[in-house]
Image (cartoon, rainbow, N blue to C red; front, top):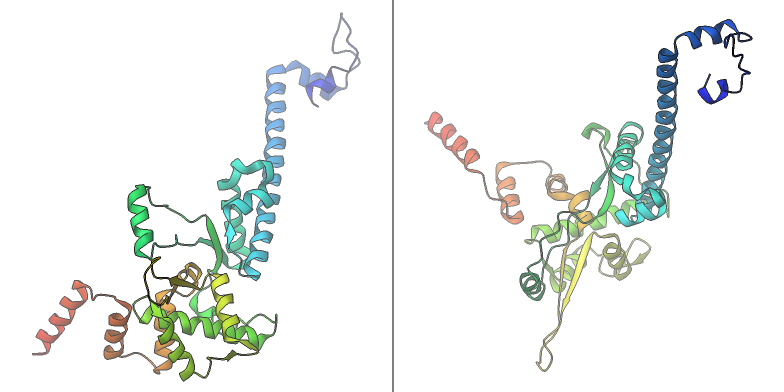
Length: 303
């Protein structure tokens, strides 16, 4: 019984234990032990309450992350603090870790931080050099990615979303994966003219499924799959604006170079040494010295 409740019992100066039940008298005979028990009970209650509160916040963060990912909206650190944590903003790391654990155990997902947007234009790079500002370590924005083994990521298991329709969603995924692959295979930068030539060859220069191609490309920009950069001539100088397309932060995390390799291998019906060399050259990946040495050793042994 807590100490403040025991104080309500009437006290007899001659025998303070008179009138108390036997269990109460036994506890009173060992006040030190009684104090320890009270302290431990109190700590357990506080710990359980704190754990329960953290668990509820972690579940709230999971729901928020799932709702954002459903609409392909970046899950921003500021949004988490505002809509999930409230006045518990200092608990971000602890709640984030608990949410990650729940996502992995229950949903087979995890929150991955998006890469920082790179300085692409010469003007942006010059401004960054002039400011002498330190490069950002993280973007503060996250997306959900699968942690399932590869054998469980097949199209037969992971179906496209039914909203707006399964066919439209599957077409959208295929289209942005293809466009991102085009950009990556062209050294990470694709001109507007070259993209149009690719789309014409695919008969996708006007429409993608049930919507205009221009609308789909704008949606891809909004979702972070591509970045459209428009460079205009300096004031007072004649010339036309140039438009180039770049890989967006979501595409780098969601598709990655492995996704591009997988798409190309699927289109060519498998992998070969010649195909891998061309892929590495197109993606700007240099052959590692270790691999080269192993190849030379195999040739020597064959001789």
